Image (tube, rainbow, N blue to C red):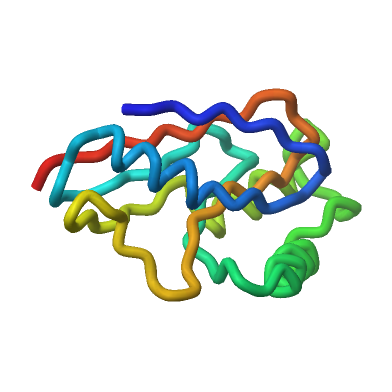
Length: 132
């Protein structure tokens, strides 16, 4: 397992970690199997998403904010219920097939960490590659 350490700079943002995931797969030595990308944070997410047009990333964050706005009154005792709700909708992990020592992404597909409660000096993402 390899742990990526990320720094976020904004309250909400998407970080493309595709390159780091590809490097972790190569370093693992696994030729064929599965790659799991997981974050242990309840106010951040891991998603597979289009990685060509950054406007689409803004669209996703805008729509999630409409669904769970920060200024809404929630029962949660903290002030970040909106971040927890968005994270639960987008998920904590993805699994990607590996063939010939490469993760099998679609043509416009990449893997992203989404920050919903930043900025944060340290966010962790665990990349585990399993022989199959």
